[in-house]
Length: 96
Image 1 (cartoon, rainbow, N blue to C red):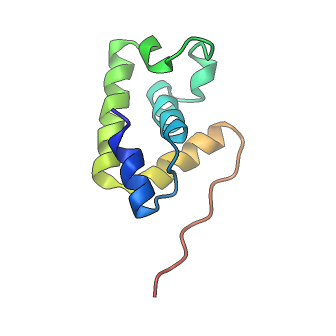
Image 2 (cartoon, one colour):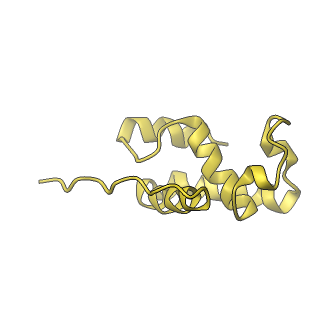
């Protein structure tokens, strides 16, 4: 589910490139907040703890990220970081 977007992200230099960050973003949005406040972080993989509705939401979001790319990922990452009290990453530099 999450294999293709991280590979594309590295190739196209998206804001997020690490597999675990994609997982954080997708899980956070599937549960509507910090995933580890809802799921047991000691039980791995966390995706196996999602009910059918949340799992469908996670898969759908991963597919949207793959289709829409960096602009959507930036928005989702910004919200995920806000749920953690962390600042958003800097906007990309304009290209000439």
